[in-house]
Amino acid sequence: MNIVQPQEKRTAGRKATINREDIIAAAMRLVGPNRSVSSLSLREITREAGIAPNSFYRHFDNTETLAISAIELAGSTLRTLIGEARYKASELNKGIVRMSVETFIHQIYADGQYLPLLLREGIVGSDSFKEAVREQLAYFEQELADDLEAIAKKTNKAPYRPDIVATSITRLVFSMGSDALDMPAEKHQELIDSMVIAIKMLITGAHIIQKLDH
Picture (cartoon, rainbow, N blue to C red):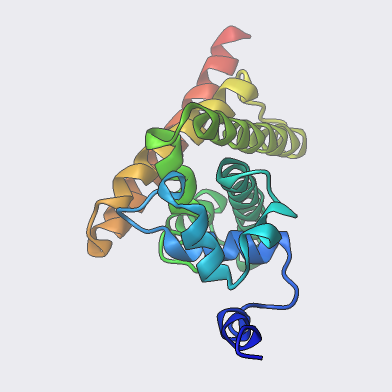
């Protein structure tokens, strides 16, 4: 009887069931401006999630696979949010570029820390984490290229090499977005304005080249 009681006390705070998303959410609660997901230990993650290490291994091989799954979730979540922003922009008769950029930058403050994760791990993460971020960027680029081509069909104004334009815009946004992590929040609006102008310049330049090329 005396042997069983301490075991019951140790497991009292643990959850009976947990899924992959719960464990990722626990890890994301531990990261911050000065804490990379790659620095998290198994003990920290399982303590935050309220599970035993064995429960962790039912879902992930190790903390690295957890981190890569978190990066993939961050990318898909952000693409969904920005896609919704583009749709809302047309409904609100607001500029698609500005609405998309505002949504992107505002994710720095949002629950989940998805944008900071992508921005941080793309710079200071391990090689495998950087590759996972690059893969997510490629998805952003492809979706943006598809959008540019769809807009071109509606307006008969096709930009030159929409694939290159999409890559340039994506890299620009993520590069400038990285600056926002270390920037006071009151400076973000100025950054958003600069990003919007830079994106419009890229798109306008692509249209001009298309005209000159023909």
